[in-house]
Image (spheres, rainbow, N blue to C red):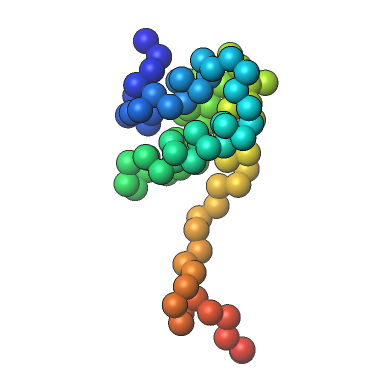
Length: 91
């Protein structure tokens, strides 16, 4: 059964793929909510790929598949920002 999994405990992705007429904007909002619920320490790129393989394989043109692929392209290791150590300093 597809639905609730460790990487989709609220079944957000499962339900997003079932919504007729869902928009890219709605998919981005759902994606953000889903990403914020990932387990601590979970590699987001790996999680996105698992979800894309699970739900997007049969729905490559679905707006959520597009958002997930964009998430894969944009996944980078975050750089620390803020505080005095995060500021650019002259060499």
